[in-house]
Length: 259
Image (cartoon, rainbow, N blue to C red; front, side, top):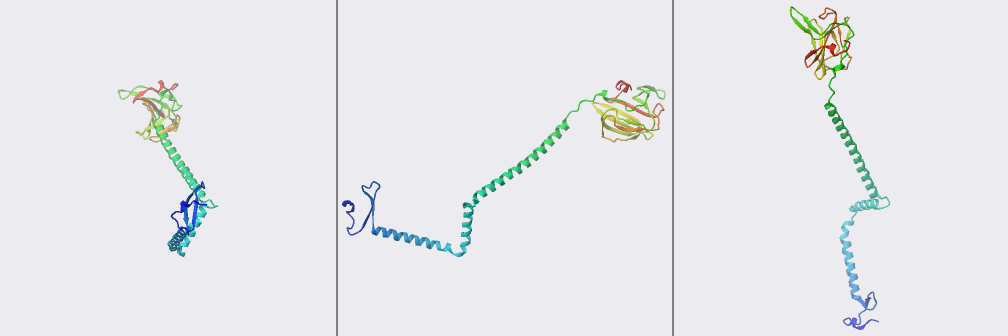
């Protein structure tokens, strides 16, 4: 069955196991019974050494760790799909964190836009004041106009118009503006000056009572005070109304139609 020259160096009394190659034409190698016994003994020795090395780790105090590891592995890789659940939980946490971050970012952006809007509004240039927006501050008759009058053997300009009204009558702002100053004059009456912008101001004198304060913003027609019993230059009860442009008096009749 086997070619003789393959076993020239073998003992004829020794059993030979021949392993043929894939083609079947000639054996790829052969093992004797002695070699197989040696291999088996070597294998048993290695197994015994492995078990002896493993014995220190098989004492009872390590069993809880092994059980815990086994349970954890079973949870992560077993039917419970624990590893997948952990991935899903991590993804949900990241999504929630991104959502919270987005909300905070939007709030900061909204706050920034509000501040920018306030800055832009503060920089907004209001249109120049139009003097033709002046109207009558009261409905009383004009008893003295914008003219030169004699005073103690001299002449001086009467820088406005005197409007006669009963005591306690309301006086209104002739145009929108801001209270520039309030002065208390001789006799206990008040003079109120309103700044309308673009160099235009209006002055209301001989007011017995005022209802405004310094720096107050006014709209056209709001009540600024009331007349008192004391007379004006014409010796009639009422108040004096004047208009100034760049600190120079202007005849109100040239601006307010029908005054």
